Image 1 (tube, helix red, strand yellow):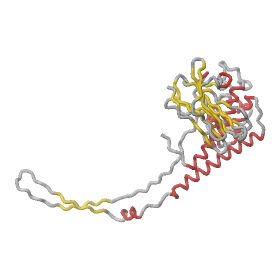
Image 2 (image 1 turned 90 degrees about the horizontal axis):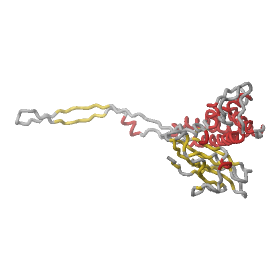
Image 3 (image 1 turned 135 degrees about the vertical axis):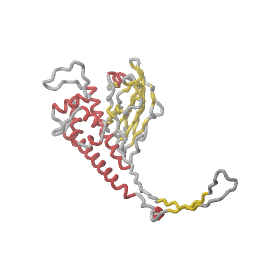
Image 4 (image 1 turned 60 degrees about the vertical axis):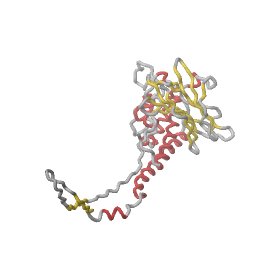
Length: 333
């Protein structure tokens, strides 16, 4: 099992996941509204390509040179969307992925949008740097060795034992007292335990999925009123949200929806997490803008991905102050 996050790493990972959720939302819109176009000079693909896929995003980034000085492929795009700290802290990569998603979806993306994402990426980098410094400072916060341990190191420990030996074949018992001295050198080694983070971040939504395993345009296929809502809801404070499921084409799908109170609106979002047995968690997120007065919906995730049953979890989050409510993990196998 992964070790728990140290407190100083928790803020860094939360900020990284928040930024990644915004990028995932843009990539999701590219998948819903975009059209795949091969790079200039490339022949049309033999098979239909999914718009907004990792490969498509990487192709657009390279074609339009959106990350000057940085080489990008689909694996790097996946790591940015997953919120991996090494990549989400690079503003060039973050802005490049966002620009590519907006180009595919044909939605506006201006210099102010790029600046906001760049600042968010720089903030994550600052939190990571502070967490690394906290790791280095952690040993100085541990208590010094106790004096009792130091005294035990001062000299050998002498033990005396009396052993009685009975010689076989004789009726008389003769006690033989043997005095022995056992010298033991005791060595006390002081060990320092520093909690480090090796917890994995969630993989991109469609990584490992194909076809209708995940339906990006949830509201074009499903109706909230016609679905079954899980109880209790995910509501908290100004945020309103719920988890729902319904049948489509012989399969069951789960999704989440999110909104905010009209009198005190807040930004946030909702996401569905899914994993196969012994697999990594994936996150399908949709952000909620503070100006949005309706509901937003996550992609709908089937209860089987690649023919394997999955475990799902639906979450509702608020950006500021940061909070996230999630359902229990729902096993569909």
